[in-house]
Image (cartoon, rainbow, N blue to C red; front, side, top):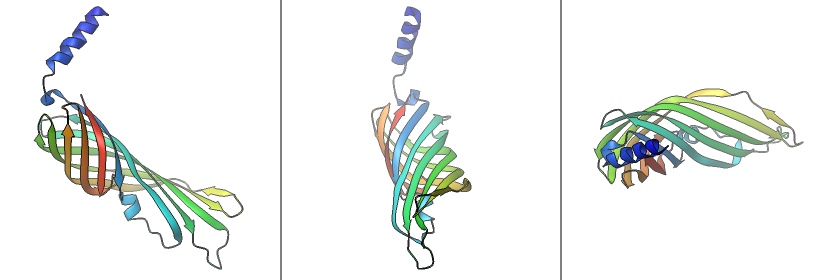
Length: 184
């Protein structure tokens, strides 16, 4: 155990800067994800959308190129508009689960600051539940749809290993998102 502890300490002290980090994990919250933007909502009122919560992992294959994956979750809820001819349907709720392989391109990669772009393409699985006025529910089978994320500009700042970030783009992680990232 002592030898293992000494080897770990030597490895940690050998990492002298940001260039030594090869892996990163992040969590984020994004506004207006694509599942909200492209959701057709003509028969609903009192709509709420949680936004997009996501986690991602990237491996720095080169100083300027990272490959990884993104997992995102979103939830949409609404009430049916009460028409004279439809009285039984009351509420609708949809959960979105998205998995996308991704690539990230670092423009600036400094010890305490970075700028980058990102592209991801994958699938969203939606699960929908209708609730009726009598209290019964009906669950739809899962629907699969192609989804994406295109981040035009990402800015991160902080220590070499722990950073906050903000991104602008379009896709399932949102038009604008903020989060934290750990690099190791």
